[in-house]
Image 1 (cartoon, rainbow, N blue to C red):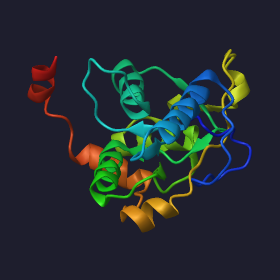
Image 2 (cartoon, one colour):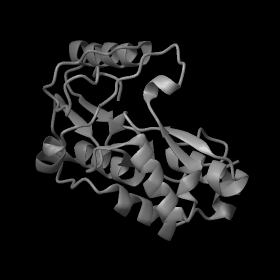
Image 3 (tube, rainbow, N blue to C red):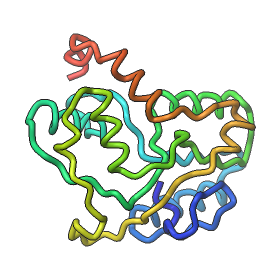
Length: 194
């Protein structure tokens, strides 16, 4: 989500926000603006999402990996010391709909999947689900990538409020990936959107 520094996980809605990059700082500023200027609001914090997307849109971890390992047959390096609980896009939509329909006001929700895992472990689960060669995935530490932007190492969410107030039970990575595999995109539908 970007609002947390990754030093004291897991994070619930009452956890102190402390973004470490511009992305997170803009999110916190947006939340503060909403709280200060609106009488009715619900803030939804979504963790890294995955699911089928329109080919003209930005890829997510699953569609990117399926392209690299499945179509291009190229090896990839995946970070093994960076964690979050990846969120299936359909579950995100369900949680947002329930938040809207609930009538709750001045609430903040951390929305995430059930598994707090590394990006490397998520990649292994993707490979297993879609039949890719897991040997093509090399675990590396975050320091392997020479980036200019600092990244929090663990932004896993506590999903108690999501379950109790919205009635949404977070699903596992295995369940979400299984749903993707069972329901591949209809190519004719994608072409109509292009």
